[in-house]
Amino acid sequence: MTKTSLEQRGFIARKNWCVVVLVFLAYPVMAHAGGLGIAAIVGLGGILGFIGWRPPHPRDVPKAIPAAIWAVMALLAWGMVSTLWSPYRSGDVLNNAQKMFFGLPLYLAFAVTLVSQSKFSISHFQHLQHLLIGMTFIWSVVVLMDVLSGYGVTRLIDPLAVGEDMEAKWGDMIQNLGHAVSVLTLLFVPVSVLLWLKGGAGKFAALALFALVLSSAIFADMNSRFIALVVLVPLFGLAIYWPRFAVRGAFFAAAASIFFAPVLGYVASKVTSEWRSQLPFSWEERVENWAYMYDKILQKPWFGHGFDAVRTFTDTHTIRGFEGRALVSLHPHNAGLQIWGELGLVGAVLACLALFFAQKRLTEQGVLAKPQLVALAGLTVSVTVIAGITYGVWQDWWWATVIFSAALISFVRK
Image (cartoon, rainbow, N blue to C red; front, side, top):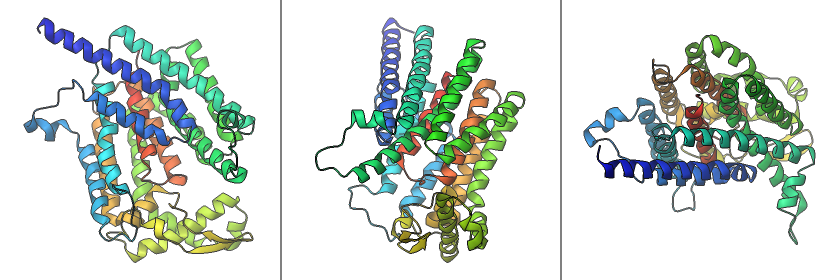
């Protein structure tokens, strides 16, 4: 290798290091503000990652890109096709399906060009590890302080403006902090495994971080995040001894939650009103929501109602004295039901194929080290739980967060 080539390689590595540092510094602010900016910073990182990156030769592209990526892109391409019969119409230049299709490669570019394929020096790599751990700890403390103080941190940084409605402001703060706890729950997985690798004080720090994140989920009444964190404990124990088995099991659970989602809708439709009335309010609404989606899936089971069609489901119901409550508010709070409802069996099969190819590739010998497999299993389960009872499938900030968190698994090594 020539001197010029070495200098160029060194410049690219330093550039990549600087970009990752900026993303690590920015993500807590973006996440605390509702998470919507995460898609922007991860996407921008992906664009900057292309500078100096050497793509594979065109004839090698089919082999260079994993089958899981082809399957995901096929899923999003099918989503764009389904907009032809979707009743939803977006007033934006790009509709949501197009935003997802063109945004995903940028999020993946961040993971590939800036993280997994970057040639960091040992000192730069260690600096990034320490920065990631430090920022996650600091942010987890800030999130917990915000929860315990009744959104005091949020109100301090973003006070009520003149003429602004406090009730609407309160709703935004609850939603934003919910997003923040979700991001923190995912980031906790690779960071905690990295800390555990350090042994001694590192293990104590991992337990302390778990206590901080779990406390935030409990005091903020975030059920999905609490469930995800609780499930992680036995899963980590299993993954330590059988890492590949744990990863395969986690991906199988994710695929099953999508493919068999109509079964969940069917069961929800059979829950009696007496049983539903004994559930917490939010869970009663979820059951009503899922039962309604089951009927919608039966109407168009093969190709679905079209991308973002759930936004046009305007049927309402009365629940516990509240009249005119939407049966589906923007999304059905279940990834599998939304995929089936909008993209039908075709979409469900493509999503499951993507998960199958991903676990097949990632569990091959020599691809990931044991600690990285442990982190991957935990992250997969966390995403499955949260996506299964909380967010809509097509939220770009959520996809960017998942890919960003998965990219951090590259730092889980000594």
